[in-house]
Length: 372
Image 1 (cartoon, helix red, strand yellow):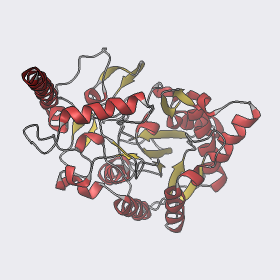
Image 2 (cartoon, rainbow, N blue to C red):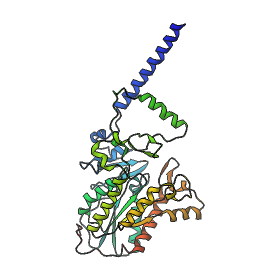
Image 3 (cartoon, rainbow, N blue to C red):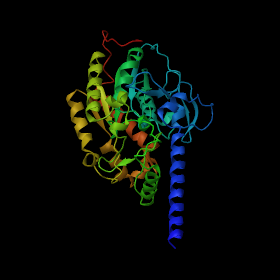
Image 4 (tube, rainbow, N blue to C red):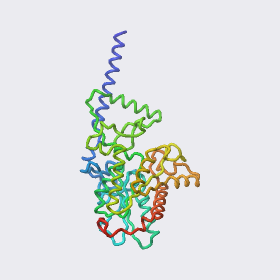
C-alpha cells in the first residue's frame, strides 16, 4: 500500500516537473521582448500586423522605439500605413508651404488611432475642421503618437523632431498610465532560476481569469496586474537600468515641465488634452477615480498649458442621446476610443483652440521653428 502511494506521489511530482519544464521552454522562446523586436524583419505589405510589426527600436533610451517607416497592412482590422517620417499619416513634406499652421500631436495609442482608420482619428478630424472654419488657410496636424508611449517618450520625441517640423502648436494627450512603461521593457525571465515556479504563476493567472480578474496588459508582453497600484507595470527591479528614467510619477511630471520649456523656446503655448474615460461608472467624474489626473492638471496649468478636458462634453452627449460609455469604445473588451469618441475629442479641441485664440495668433518672426 505504501509503495503504491509512493509511486503515485512520484508520478505526480514527475508530471509537475515536466509541466514546469515545458512552461519554462515556452517562456524562453517568447518572441515579444524588446530584443526580439530589434531582430524582427519589416512586415510584408498588406497582411494583418501586430504591434511589434509596426515599431522599430530607437538609439535614444528616452524614446526606446518608434513607428517603422513604410509599414503597411491591417492592424486590428483597420488599414494602417506609416509614412517615411515614421508617422501614421500620408506623406508630409518637411518644407512648409507659405501660411501653413502646423500642429504637432504627442500621445500614445489613443491619439494614434488604435482600432480606427487614420482619417477617423481626432487629429485628422481637427485638421479638417480647422480648414473648414478658416477658409483659405492651410493646416497640418502632425500625429507623432505611438502606441505604448508615456510622457517621457512623447516629450523626447518632440525635442528630437520639432526643429525639423517647426511647430505652431503642440498638443500632448495625457492618459492615466503615462507614468508607466511599455510592457515589453521588462527583462527576460531567468528560466534557469529555481527561485520561482513558472507553472505556479501560470496556474495563478488562469485562476484569476476564471474569477474575472485582470491578469495582464494588452501590449506586447504580458505583465502581471498589481492589485496595490491597480496598474499593469513591471516591477522596478525587472526594468533595465537604462530605462528607469522613463518610469514613475516624478519623471512624468518633469517631462511635462520640459515640454513647457521647449514650447517657450518656440514661442508657442502647449496644450494638454484630457479625455474622459472612466471604466468604473458611465457617468462618473474621472477625477474621483484618478487623483493623479487632477495633480497633472494643476501642474500643467501652473506651467502655462492650455488645459482641454472632454469630460463635460462626453457626459453631456451620453445623457442627451441616452447612451452608456460602451458607445464610446471600440468594443466591450477594448476601451480605446471608438469613432464617436474621436469625433467628440476633435470638437472639444477645435472649440478650445479657437476660443483661446491660439489658432488666430500668427507665428512670431523670430521664432526658431524650422521649415517656415
